[in-house]
Length: 163
Image (cartoon, rainbow, N blue to C red):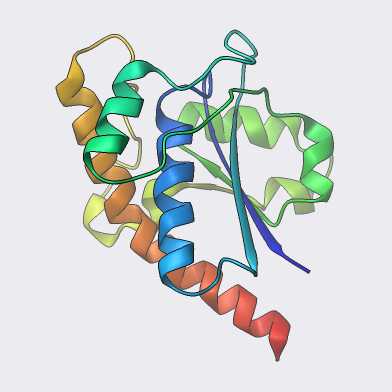
């Protein structure tokens, strides 16, 4: 049975598809591609069916990541099949925990940058949507930095299941 991780931001066109793409690459590089499923969604449905923001696509492709994506809205029913729900900022964290049907489901929601020891107290990945390309590049740096710690945590969970 796969370990399932879903990244969530506001509209699922900037931060969460970026995190999904980066983490999927890390999972593959670690040889866990058959054991871990990675996807993303937004807290709102404004962009459902759209691709990722062109600036997200540009930054991902420049860094060598896959940029294929279709936006969708997070559904509370998904908690039942997910092992970990990764919020990109504290607003998403609160919204997702409110959506969680049970306390156990609410406990599955974590902030991405909580997996980056260097993040300190600033755990939000800022929304780059209203800015320039540099905000998307900064977002990618934050996502990449946190992905290493997240991968270590997920690997521990996956190996624990196999034991």
